[in-house]
Length: 157
Image (cartoon, rainbow, N blue to C red; front, side, top):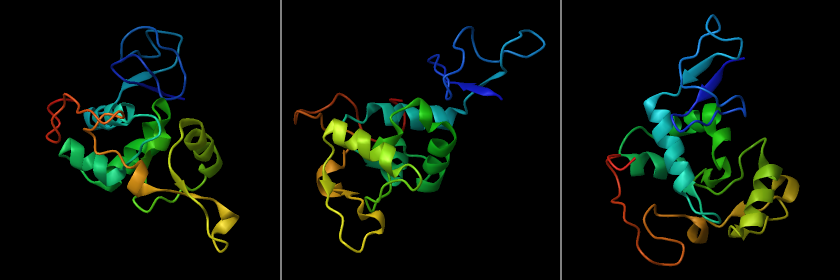
């Protein structure tokens, strides 16, 4: 199985982190390592900036980068998101990621992410994210102070 390496030295699946990108099986007995696409790097960098207890939607991330759209961000998160706090990049309706609801819910509860109670009609009675309170604007620090980053354009990533 191939491993993908972020330029920061992380892999998406917990594989080896020795060496630089582009290692070939003919050169090494270890797994093949490929550099992530530049857009994927940028999306994952944004995911890492989201403070614990806060979330951004797929569309928010694309808007913050000034590139792509929600589907492109979702695709990056589906392919490479395990290397970052994936539970902080969410659907705009606050519904927990299908197939990962319980793992995400554990993270949200641990981080104190605002949740809304589930209605009796909700499948599995799972809560939703309280998007009004949990959504992060990409600028405001958790303590209410401003950040040093300008929003959009991707130049700061």
